[in-house]
Amino acid sequence: MSTASLTLDPHFTVGAINRRLFGSFVEHLGRCVYDGIYEPGHASADAEGFREDVIDLVKELGVSAIRYPGGNFVSGFRWEDSVGPRAARPTRLDLAWHSTETNQIGLHEFSSWLEKVGSELMLAVNLGTRGVAEALDLLEYANLGNGTDLAERRIANGKRDAFGVKMWCLGNEMDGPWQLGHRSADDYGKIASRAAKGMRQLDPSVELVVCGSSSAQMPTFGEWERVVLGHTYDDVDYISCHAYYEEKNGDLDSFLASGVNMDRFIESVVATADHVKAVRGSDKTINISFDEWNVWYIDRFEGVDKITGIDNWPVAPRLLEDSYTVADAVVFGSLLISLLKHADRVTSASLAQLVNVIAPIMTEPNGPAWRQTTFFPFAVTSRLATGVALEVKLEAEHYDTEVYGTVPLVDAVATHDAATGGTSVFLVNRSQMEDATITIDVAALGPVGIVEVQTLSDTDVYAANTLEARDRVGLATNAPALCANGVVTLTLPPVSWTALELRAE
Ligand code: AHR
Image 1: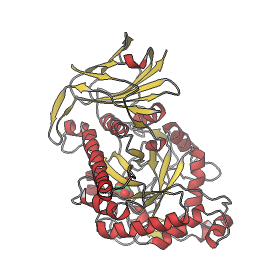
Image 2: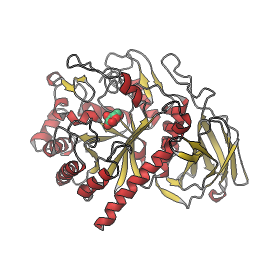
Image 3: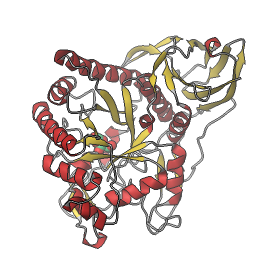
Image 4: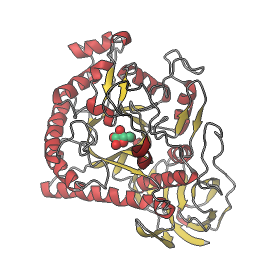
């Protein structure tokens, strides 16, 4: 048994929690769109061909903004292909994922789906094979009310009011050699600056995300951010971070400590952005859009999932369909804790991705839709983490990991909502062997009571929800917990994620 203690005080805040922290990502990749959110022949499909069972799960997940349409896909995408009469839309090769894109879903259809799920649209422009002119065309088509060729084309295509898209990504992972139109930091910084200036000339209200590194492991990491922000600091609002984690070589101890790596990643990007700010003597602060994060077994994908050759690229193949375990969900929950711990600077984030592709929601064609293990920490955190993130004074025992050195056995963050009087604490126990007994000093909150304790754990840390056993893993609400004399005590089982909900009494 290990022990840990936390002290909560509503006066010690990290920052306000932006709802955009609970965003996600839908890419034209594999079965995310086709045979995922869209399956016209399915029994639950609505009049537009969208699966209502999936819509219900996305609503339950509580997703704020959704990044679209890529990802690597966007770097070869011609947005004009996907608007206008469907019968006239061209079929194209998607070079990123070696698939065939039918363009049956585009901006209009996706925006209609977003209205059904109640999420905001976040659009990416293609700065891989295309440039400033096409980015401006898309912005004009999407955001201008009427009176120009492009705005009138949108109206003729069935959308009288502008889409009014606020968040725009200036390309995707342009530091990655795999990216169509991959560039040096210097070249990308220049084109991103030109695109951003032009976009603001057209619509000053847009919020712009410039590409940071596609991972902290890239050889150019750090220098990329410095150079790109050197060109774009005055033009953009956010720099992106992307990070995926997986258990490698059976080293579960290190995998469970992935949140430590995410903490360091965020703090490095903040330091670099603030360095550029200092050098320029700027008053402006650049925040982070963590617009791709998840557990992803990339090694598995690189080993087996590739479609090769030039002919017969499939439509909506099964790609990146990771099945998530309890251990994956615990790590996933710890990544949410890391995002919340940095809520002052990470003000937008996108879980990559949403349906079928490294996703919390899975579907079968003509079959059911179900929640993966990762669904639960996201849904609960999105619902409970409101108001401000608190600085918790965490004292925990440590363990040694091969990859990240000595790290705390427990990680935690708390949130407090002055409007509702609600306080929530999110915790992970990284130990594979021992329970963790947690003592939380809540005296500064005044009289509080426990509403609920929800825990994700299992004696089999590799248990998963599959087509055959869709409800194998879920949340338990029977963790031992006590609240007395301004102290909450609870016990976390090994390899577990927990959400504690408190209410003022
Ligand atoms: O989310 C899957 C892929 O991961 C995205 O297309 C790309 O941006 C990243 O490398």
